[in-house]
Image 1: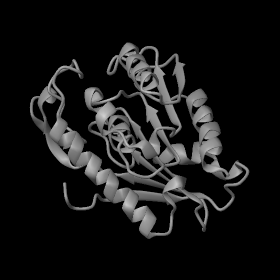
Image 2 (image 1 turned 180 degrees about the vertical axis):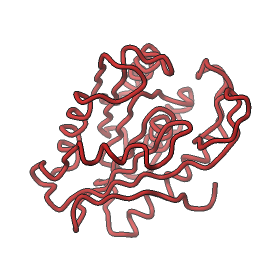
Image 3 (image 1 turned 45 degrees about the horizontal axis):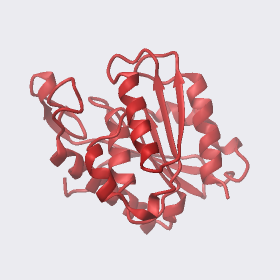
Image 4 (image 1 turned 30 degrees about the vertical axis):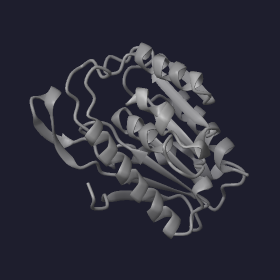
Length: 227
């Protein structure tokens, strides 16, 4: 995955003061969370009147084992329903490298890394953790929605000291049948045991987003991007 990913971009103002790189879930594409930008009403937050640039990359097409080898947009392969037993380390690290390219592109456009949030839903959230915890300079935050910590055993040795205090927002649905709530909660506990500060939220919903969650995301973005 050496070529730069194509992205959908939405800037909420003419002079963006921050960037949110937001990865979609399995089988979706970069357009999936575009409608959420309007719901967030980010410009209403004090200190962000210049706007925020939302970057929604399209994952590459690849065969997904659990879906009978069907090719679809995916950040990595999923071998089986038990996400922790057999992980696609190669695919995860390829997507980590792609995130690094996207961060570098924002920096080249004048955005300080301390004003860049890595975000993702489901598979995209796993990639945001994979890349964000290992990134060599401090980011603004990691926003992890309906997801989990991948390659957990390697975090302690591979994590960057620069992001040991990075704010992490984790949100999950109590009725999620795709990634069980227990799986996400275990990821939260693993991160906490490593010293990360995780802001945890759970909601009565399935593998999705809800209005309460969007409101909490808005508040969190206001905390990590303003100042």
